[in-house]
Length: 176
Image (cartoon, rainbow, N blue to C red):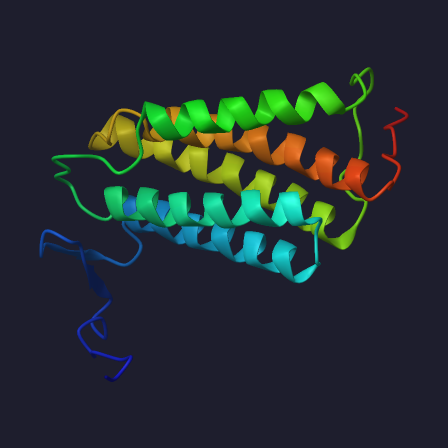
C-alpha cells in the first residue's frame, strides 16, 4: 500500500465524513496539534521512563488517537472519548498525587528526559485545548472533548512530577 494518495496536493484533506476541508482549517489545526502531542509522548517513552509511567503514556496515546478520530469529522454518533476516560485520568491523578510531596511552589519543567518531554507534552496539550475551545465555538465538538483535554493537561503535569519522584530526581522550584 502506498502512503501517498495525491488527493491533498491541492491543499485540502478529507474528514472521515468524506468532506474535504483546507489543510489549515481549524479542525485540522486541532488534529495536527493532537498528533504533535502524541509525538511528544512517544519521545517521552524514548526517554525510558519508569514502567508505571510508560504504561500510563501508552494508554493516553491511544486515547489521543481516539480523540483525533472524534474530531476528524463533523458528525460523531458515539464519541470514543467520554466521561469514562476523564474519570480514569482523575483516578490516576489522585493515585499519583497521594505519593507526591505537596506542591507549595511553582516548579520548573525538567527532571529526567522523560519528565521534561512530558512537561512539553503538557504545554502542547494546553495549546490544543485553546484551539479546541475556538473550534467548539465555531462548529461544535463532542461534549467531553474539552473536558478530556483540560484533565489531560493536569494529568501530564502530575505524571511528569511522578516520573521524577519514581526516579529520585529532585524538582527545581521556581524562585521569582
